[in-house]
Image 1 (tube, rainbow, N blue to C red):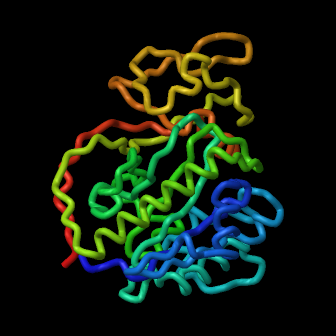
Image 2 (image 1 turned 90 degrees about the vertical axis):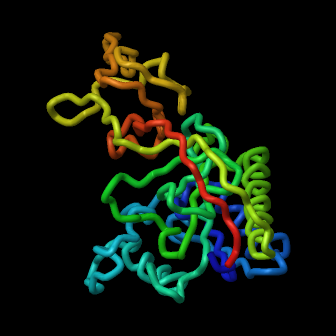
Length: 294
């Protein structure tokens, strides 16, 4: 791998996730703590209109808009604001898949689920992010195109903060933890650029296999809630016949899968609109090769 010369840090891809928003605003005023001797760091706000309104997005989810379908589409009248914005971000920090793209992008997020601190990486083949010392969640399904904002750079990751943290709220403790993790990650890139050899190792990571929808009435309305025994159990094993939902009349609904899974984003507030109760994951051990700058 070659050195990482241009790094971007994005806050506010979702306009109601406040830790990254206020960190990016702070760094735009005073970027000194981001700078390292071997590379430049550019902070920016992902979705200014959503930030102004303190909502997740205005027209559609910006963090699902960096696919070929949207980035290569011709501008049309009355298209969603985030589609126009995605093309602008792609031109500034990409273009996606090009030699001119930024080397790395961090995308800062919060979650209302009890997931702790972890890094979101597209796949185990993303070598540099896999070496950063933090729990890993691999989000890309087999055959799925990368769709997140950090995918316009040559490499990148998103990170979810220690939760649960409510939307539209900034907490000093979680703000500080996010700031510390970014400082650690930037220090890691600095060491890489200066020729540090990182040995091969094995790591346990969680890989998405699908999503579990809420039970619904025939008219599409949600008919049950996350079971108390599942609530706040992100990344813990869920076995066949364990309870996962409780109907509003009090009946239990059990997990009908054949194997143990590890749910995450349990009862995430942003996913009610999609009727997603949690993400299903498997735990794998990966052999990660050593890392050194060419």
